[in-house]
Image 1 (cartoon, rainbow, N blue to C red):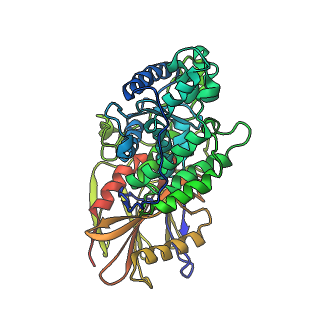
Image 2 (cartoon, one colour):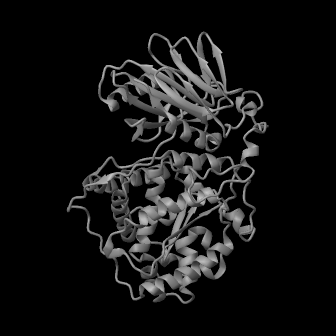
Length: 502
């Protein structure tokens, strides 16, 4: 039950989280972007697929795949969006890009010849935005599109004997860990991508991101985050992807040239998947998985999958029964966890008329009106009232306020500035996206916070629109980050149900 304080004469308001509707950026590429030329390669594209498939079979015998349909569907969705944006000159009809998640905490990803792509769970959890995750995947599939794996293997064959597929598995896939995989270690000194290949993948990766509607600056940001976590024993991905020199600055220069208007940084679905993974508990390391022969048990599954959020998943047939169950007690945090007594959102909804809006919320949520002209909808155990205001950890809040601007972005920025001044832990998480509320132009902005009541991270989103009278109507949704996926469907319904009355 956190409280966001807004600087407006000391008035307090509650918390924030909402649904973001995924938009696509509009690309306006120039003709001055860096020209990337694939290296000479004696292998045919069909041979890439053959070798990649052999290496993929070896990899999947040695590494634990994450058996979670929602996470898998999400990574496939991001990956295919990027694959469709690969320039035509690097598209091969033989290639079939596929994407799987490996259940290890090491920060890494790799793509095999022919398009077999793997993303470690640790990379998904480390990225701060969907754009950064997309940047890592774009970099990897750029190596595939440029056929770097077989080109490098051809060089190594001049000096080393052994299976090309095993060499690719040992070096391109597993990096340092691959040296412990017997025959797969052959040729590792040659198969780690050269600085020139890394530079090419950086440039093509940025161009693919721009074509797919992502802000390519996020690729540079991903490398910067990994560098900040680096040093001795730093992320595996950096050891396998040597810095071609001034990487951060070079990618940013390319991104500036590409000029993507409204390039996408983030999505709420990304944060939902992150919360889902973190709720599974600690993933094994690659070394732990290797010692177990790839049979390391998967972490516990998230309790439900929402097919509105994840189109490729299937709704649990027992979900309707689970809507009335309470969350299990958090044994690691018994003193400050309000959520242990908070019910899941009901699958049944009740409509309220809040004056400025009509809204439909789960029927196990209460309507709480405060002295501050705000209306809060929250489940029992997820809110508390004091001094005429409401603080809550789960639910939604609606308010209408005056604004000095008729520009929606400026009015939203003004509100967010007021909120962050009163809440030092509140941070923006990516750029806002345009959507609609009751047929009106609206903005959805994702934020992150640490609850001052529970001490837990919260996923926060602000939905804003202007009324015909020039007032700013905003809706605040909130849930603890590790529980957000259980609320996504309810927040989605609420956002769609809003009817503005003025």
